[in-house]
Image (tube, rainbow over all chains, first blue to last red; front, side, top):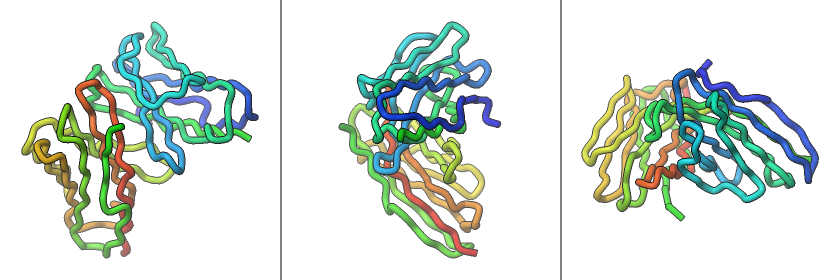
Length: 113
Length: 111
């Protein structure tokens, strides 16, 4: 157990729907990062939050949004889902904003049918 | 778009062989270079974070070097074991705190 908890582990939903993925960072970590890993794109950085504020943005679609709550857990919201959104979504946390000491969660596998 | 490339894409070696892979990245706006070990269906495990030109890091049989001026890093595995079989990812972090991953090198070590 890495200390980073992601739920759910698996999710199957239909096109056009909206889902929320949840991440609880390792205790004491203030930064949360979201990644998408799909077969043809490799591992893509989506977004980073530090202590509730957005700090960096990567290849995140406008249909996706995220936030980090006061208790430091984070949610990734995916809307108007398309077949191509099927992927493994990882969350990682680190103690500071610089990213040292990354720890990854086990991922949420999203399947859009 | 930042270009982070890893080579080779895949590698098959015999148990006991030593091996190395390359990660190339932009030489400008460098902040850090991360190496990860990633087994299928598991999340990436952080191996090294390298920030200074000329850095050398070592963890057991695995070591890495960094050249920020020419934009490359090498990962070495000495005496490969079957349990070393995994995908090795490098990721370039720029000063804007964006992390860009390479496509990975898939290593398979045959007993």
